[in-house]
Image (cartoon, rainbow, N blue to C red; front, side, top):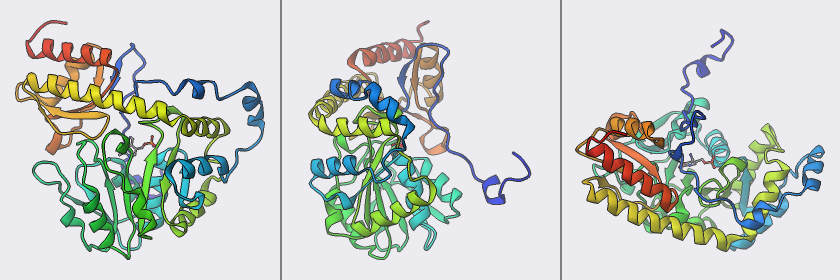
Length: 355
Ligand code: PMP
């Protein structure tokens, strides 16, 4: 750190992304990417001409992509925002809506919320999840602060029903409620339709999980026209061309091939069910999941030891040091073959077997 860094930033902890080691070919079950490639037509969507056109800036209004998303979800383009990954949108939202009254979010949730809050000097309170790791929606009623809730939540995988989200939104009319639906396509109940009824709801989504495009960096959000204009203003005040031309093209083709992604989500849900059962057969406690990952712990092995033993065997899962969840690992659902290797390795580790 140099002596020039702004004092507030000196005290900010940056987000720690899941590890991406390159030493060997790992089975990567640690960052909730899709194990499947984008749809065949998406693979062919970028032409040499598109690459040649990189000499030109991308469309800052992202008109075509917004229209396609609006068409798919039955909203108006003015109710859609798109940006460079949903992290970008979360960042804008904390900056835009957090400072006035401060922010609240659960104590166990996506680790970036506290980073964005610190980055933008937003005072924040972390509300503990219940003993069973669910969010108690009553904790968020009428609190008059910017609220960020991942629904389904990460890393627990648990979700709130739509009516509880509506209660939260309804009871905080003077503040923005951000619902992060990064994982909603794997079984959660989306609340995006409520954006037509409430002007304080921002629903954030991503192409990184169910749309197999994590490396393309594309996120989107739904909200009333005015909320969308607010975050557009921040985008235009930082980096108007923040989605590159190739990603725009890939995103458009992704929306055009929605049925492929629906199919892949169903496959992942099926695999998740089988893996949950297998882990339970090995004595694990596995939380219910509406996501593309499982959150699981065993009484026979610590979370950290399991993580390390799996890594030795070429399998990466995500372990969090946080006291409340240190017994758990978050396991992304891969292909059935990858998950067979994972279960085999778990059995071997539990039986004290050598690799
Ligand atoms: N929200 C949640 C809950 C996440 O887990 C992630 C992925 N780490 C994101 C948002 C950000 O995803 P991306 O920036 O790739 O769209």
